[in-house]
Image (cartoon, rainbow, N blue to C red; front, side):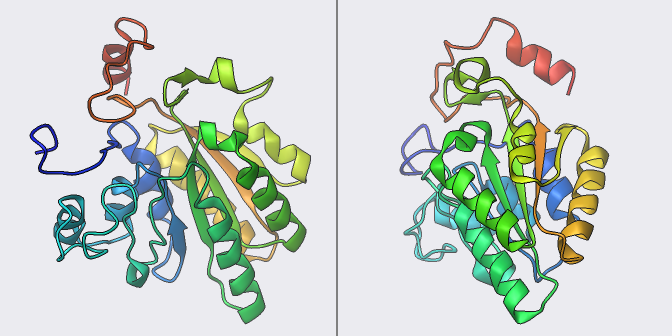
Length: 237
């Protein structure tokens, strides 16, 4: 449908990274909130959004979750705790700090979880949001979905020195790295971060490493990827 123009805009598939969204969100409660990325379909499904309404949104139908005005990159369903996918890299990160602060002020056990790509860790919103969450001990979890590319730029060309999770040390909070294709490892790490957040101990950073099976977007020629890279990912997933 996208290839023939039935779906307007861009479509960024989540294939290859599903264990992250399902593993993290599987530990959350209905009252917890998430914010997502331009690659947010998997997160929306895992949080319980109606798949038919989500697809209607992709097709820009009035019956969609956002009345057809959000499209593929801005899916939201506040009733399900899905604050929205976001076409702005790093745009969703500050939202969950607000969730965490609100929960702390109101005395609830709610937690805000944001999904972001490795490239988003270079955005100012990441540094500012993690810093404030740490200062306020806001119950938040920053889930870095490291698929090794910021669009077409490999992490070795865009991240200096350390893996993204190691940046947590600069804010005095825990940072953990797991295999993002290992559903059980993702759940276990999330469970630990959630327990910490609900106990009033503040935020955590969780880096999940998992390559994407397709291009950055549908139609991406992927000339930046090595021959056989995708086949290797699928064979060892």
